[in-house]
Length: 141
Image (cartoon, rainbow, N blue to C red; front, side):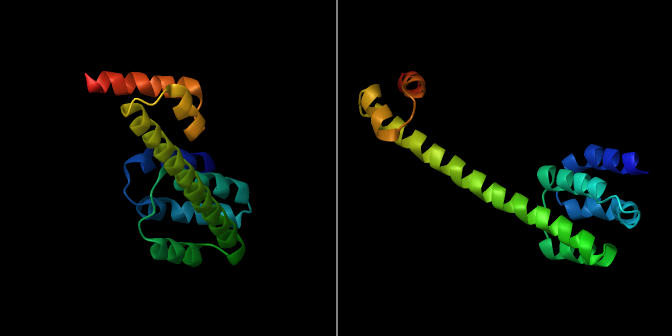
């Protein structure tokens, strides 16, 4: 039962627009596994849900958790979900900053700034600035 649950989730979650739909198909098995005390397996399955799928309705997810799991299991799952959300926000901010820095470098290169100056201003590696310069020159033709 345990292997089959994770295998089903891994096979099915990719095309699902909301993990709550997939969760509803396996929740009874997950609940049984939780009652048997295998929280690490539940964590693995839920980790996969959170990392690959999308959650459109957080209230519905919370309702499913409360209805099917003990407070202890629910708390562990929700703590992990919150941790992933925070990591996602931090990663998103970092990616946004890198994209903004890259855009500044491109604008400077379009204005014929020297790659060494662009690297110094943006703190990007010179090799990356030189690569961006090639892209700018290619697009400009």
